[in-house]
Image 1 (cartoon, rainbow, N blue to C red):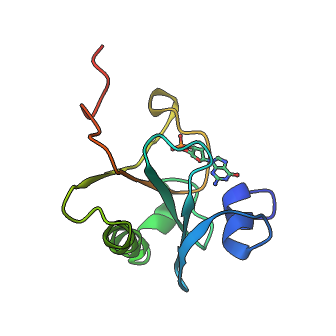
Image 2: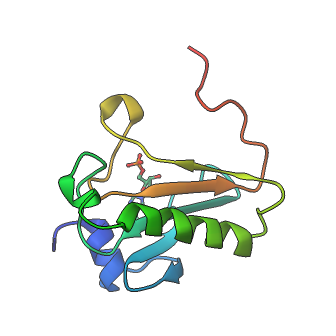
Length: 116
Ligand code: DGP
């Protein structure tokens, strides 16, 4: 999708700090990092979000998680640990309508959800 920023990053049309890319996925550092390591893993093909049927018509979710785990190891997080996070909808503050997985680590990440 030509007007999707993450499609444009995956195609190389828009600059980003890309840390990993293969035929299926691209991973790049988040522009607003919430942790010392904050990488976004996206499918190269446009998939709107986790409710999009296209997320399930291939093994793209598995490939995204596999890439995330490989990147975590390269980033030195294998022993200290890390968090994989996927937002959907306004309550989760989803802001970019292209499926993406957040890889966060490099410090203690605290509680999974901010207490109410
Ligand atoms: P989410 O809230 O799950 O939709 O997170 C989207 C993330 O994408 C957010 O943490 C900021 C990041 N982001 C948005 N635009 C860009 C961009 O142009 N480049 C990079 N590297 N990250 C972006």
